[in-house]
Structures are given as structure tokens and as C-alpha cells.
Image (tube, rainbow, N blue to C red; front, top):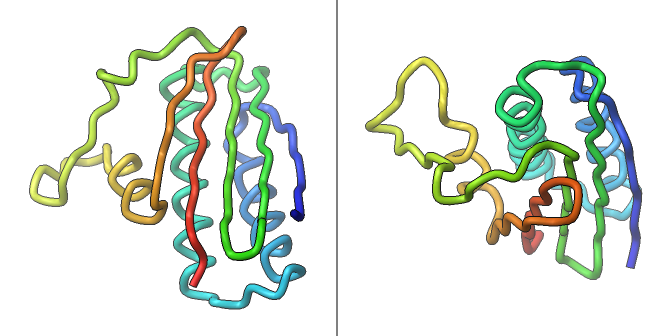
Length: 134
């Protein structure tokens, strides 16, 4: 298994760092499907942006932790925050027909990853996103 861990502040400027790290991690591990890498980057971008907006209310001094694992062809990204507990039932999944000015983050994440799990952990929340790479 190949693994990398990152910790960033809840400032949107660090999302670019996560995307580029993820992209290089996949390339270093001989995965070069550029279209799929882009979609994975987009989904992770949305997951982090949602934490920054909805969990931390754009406060830039909070922590977000990521663990990126690649075992054979299975990618797992765990994203942990230290925010208040979220009620998974309140997470809105809009379809394209219900598109407004925003709110497609969960749709994008669910479209890209095979499974998404939200876990209530001590001191925060965790999302576990898994995908079989082709």
C-alpha cells in the first residue's frame, strides 16, 4: 500500500496544494489516466470546499487532515475535520435538474467515487471516499 498524509488550514488557497499533491501521488504510482485524475481532483476539491464553507463557515484557522491510500487499483481518501458534528441526513444531494447557483458538490463527489462514508469521530467528522481506478 502507498500512503500520503496532509494537514492543511481551512483556507481555500490550500485546496490547490491538495489537488497537485494528489495528482503527483497518483502519477508516481503509475496511474496516468489524466481525465479520471482530473475528476478525482475536482471531487476532492468539492469535499474540502464543503468543509471550509459548511463546517468552518469560511474561518481560515481550522484544520483539515487528509490521508490518501492506494492499494493495487483502489484509491481511498479520508478527510477529517475538527468541526461540530454533522447530521448526514441534512447533506443535500442535488441532481442536475435541480441545479441552482451552487450545491453540486455532493453530486460531483458521488459521481466520481464508488462509495462515500461519513463517520462521526471524536472531535469532528470524517469522510471516506473510495474508488476503483481503471
